[in-house]
Image (cartoon, rainbow, N blue to C red):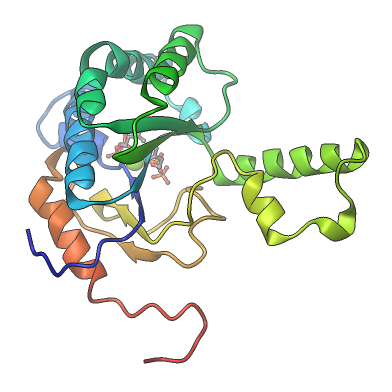
Length: 237
Ligand code: IPE
Ligand code: IPE
Ligand code: MG
């Protein structure tokens, strides 16, 4: 590992290309999701080893419920498997796991697994992995708006006191903004991922399908991040 690399605080990965990975091999889409699932765990641990404090993984969007029931059911079972088969390794690595997204209409078995993971890992402090599951950026802003309006109606907040900090505090999770967004598979879009948090993020779009996204590819992504010159609206240096 290059000691001189600057490590971004919060990295988001839009996990994409599982289906195409499988199709190119003549396999069912489920096989692609399974292969991607094992990469997810590897990516979580490698991010922690690199010193990335916050990793947000976009694994299922609110819109993904439009897919065939068979595929949705397969993915839901994988999320339960995350708890049953892979979670211990994240615990052993001191990783705190949190979730972003709406609970409705996730099945109870998935919600139970999510709740257990959250509770059991809540005191871990090496790194945070935020699974964006049944997540949509627009829905997050809608939910944020409702929470804030309710506080105003209840008399706990005045309209003049609504600041950017208040917006931030009412998102699904209190975590820093995204520094870097990686989307695998070559698609050049956000697909509703963390619209608010990505305001000043850098973007990287490797062509690699997620099941092929190795530690080396992740490392290369961080090297690329180090070539960027972030200005946040200020003057070029
Ligand atoms: C990403 O892979 C996983 C999810 C969105 C759940 P896709 O299933 O979107 O794979 P492609 O884009 O069809 O290849
Ligand atoms: C975005 O991928 C959602 C996730 C990675 C979970 P999709 O594959 O669903 O996005 P589109 O439909 O190609 O934009
Ligand atoms: Mg896709």
